[in-house]
Amino acid sequence: MPTTSRSRIVLATAAGLASLTATAYILPQAIGAAAHAEPSAELLAGLRVLLSNDDSMQAAKASHADGLGLYEMRKALCAAGADVVVMAPWQVQSGKGTAVTNGGALTLARRTQLPAGYENDCTGAPSGSPVYGVCLSDDACGAGTPSATPADTVKFALRSGLAAKVGWADGPDVVVTGINSGPNVSAQVNDSGTVGAAVAAIDDGVPAIAFSSSSGDSTNSYFPVANYRANAEFGARLLAGMRERSLFTGKFAVKVDYPDVSTGRRAKAPLWTDIGHGKVVWHDYAAHRGGGDTFDIVPGVCADRPGDSCTETVRRADSTALLSGHVAVAPVTADRTYGATVDDGKNLRKLKHYVEQDAPRP
Image (tube, rainbow, N blue to C red; front, side, top):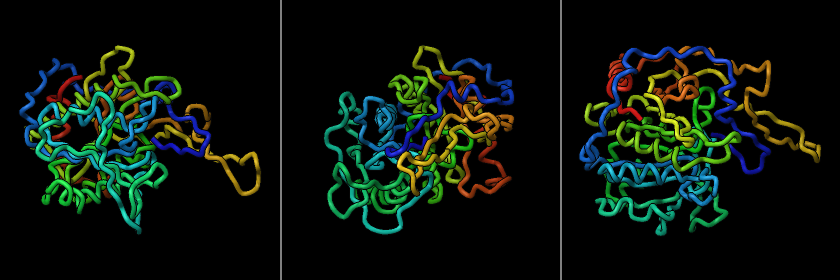
């Protein structure tokens, strides 16, 4: 979700989203199917995964908003047999969308001491499963060094980084981005660096899946490990099923948003959705207290602004599904062309069928 360190900011919350006026989500008949058993770990054996995000690889904040979800996803994928290499932004780059850097130099900083509890998650992986942060510098990355964008990290990894650092000259089998701290639904999808990184992958013809998790409090300032972990475990099983059915495609990215389960409720079955048109976070700009030509960036919850175009009108919107407790799955095309049909819809139809009838249940 978009953030800025110099702004007075109130981010969208699950409670705030729920107060949006939305059309009812019609459940497919197949959603009532019984839960599916977890796939064998062997289903991801040998799968080469590039893992990135927009929250950085720091995972140092008590809020868990700066990359902890990435380590939960890494843990789940490695436990399922995948070979995972992380190349992620050096600093938090939330809200960067598909932005890229057009000049200068990129430097990799390998993390040798991983966050507590995640040190041995990928022991024995053929690549060594390194974790890299990518900064904008021709020198070592430091505390204040600017960061590469999410799209930078994926483009760099696919075109140079993976070949140079782990010998993957023909690239990964799939790019996974996230787990983002906060949902990426409706109009804010265009702002999402997590989704932007996935779009960068399909720009190069590499399959990509972007994962995001809901927050666990009314201010969207705390992101429980429970949400990341449930999302990651579901994500590993989802990838296993997609791989088994040959559903990986570079024609479009797949966006997966996971509801809040930190209070003990169980996520509902995944739904195939469209990206909504309603606003979720409303970006506003107020005169700075010092006056002059300075303005504060003051995003807020859309529902707090009566009269703004916050009403969701898309019938099968991702935000509506998520707020009703379902895992929301939606395709994202790279060209953003209205009404575009990718591959005559063949791959979309196959994936939609999988999500609605055969995908794992949380």
